[in-house]
Amino acid sequence: QVQLVQSGAEVRKPGASVKVSCKASGYTFTSYAIHWVRQAPGQRLEWMGWISAGNGNTKYSQKFQDRVTFTRDTSTSTAFMDLSSLRSEDTAVYYCARDQGYQLIAWWGQGTLVTVSS
Amino acid sequence: EFVLTQSPGTLSLSPGERATLSCRASQSVSSSYLAWYQQKPGQAPRLLIYGASSRATGIPDRFSGSGSGTDFTLTISRLEPEDFAVYYCQQYDSFPTFGGGTKVEIK
Image 1 (cartoon, rainbow over the protein chains, first blue to last red):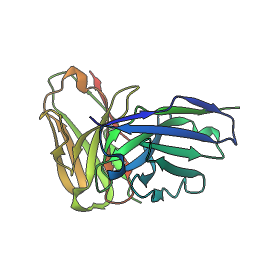
Image 2: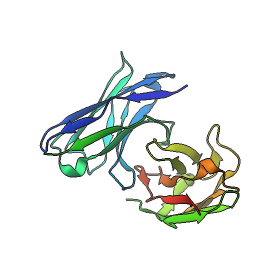
Image 3: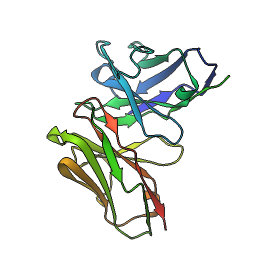
């Protein structure tokens, strides 16, 4: 079955960067895009963008495009999300999720809590 | 950008009752690229409905979706104890956006 396992919780100071990993299994990694979605405390889900696991093409939400970078390692079936210039408002649970086609998000990782605090 | 507005914010019901959740889009969602997710505390969202009315794999038939254009509905025919959760609608016609959620709580 499809599984997405994310890296553990992180604490960063304002201005720092964080990199979250997402290891996929149970399917052919290069056949589907990976989305990144975040959820700040008490807030709605917020789409950050996606990366094609096959060719590495990316699409970023305008809100994050200056600070976020998605990459992937096909040899380990792992996707990565790198967010820079962190501020307190970036405190959130970050999810990776697998596309099912036409940008339908069908499978989710367990989430990674990123806390930004001085 | 698509804005999705869900109502009500909170729905207080008893097990066995029917739940009707609404999702309204700021512009028409073509090809019914509208999904519904369930999220329980401390868990990731789970896909329930896609294409406005198709149930995802393993989703019980008490969950049903309907609607088109700008108005969509998720119906839970008879609430089971495990159905009390937050429900989000999401459009994927354009870059994905989510509604603000409806919390279904035990009355």
